[in-house]
Amino acid sequence: MTYALEKAIDELERRGTRKGRREGRLEGERKGKLEGRLEGKLEGKLEGRLEGKLETAMAMLGDGLPLETASKYTGIPADELARSLGKSES
Image (tube, rainbow, N blue to C red):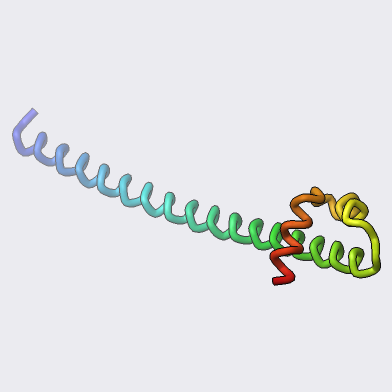
């Protein structure tokens, strides 16, 4: 192989490597952004559900039902419910 041909092949390989890295980086950024959005949406939904359950528990307790009953129907353990409601009231 001649020197000029070897040099041309080396340059094409370098260009291909740079292009591959650039494409890989862009693909990684796209995936990361998508995962971040999905994670944020899921976190928001979970927080909203918990907030709704806490409101339900507060209403139940406001109507005189025992903490254990509110725990049973909201699915939140009684000790966690007591801590959460204690924090929300202060």
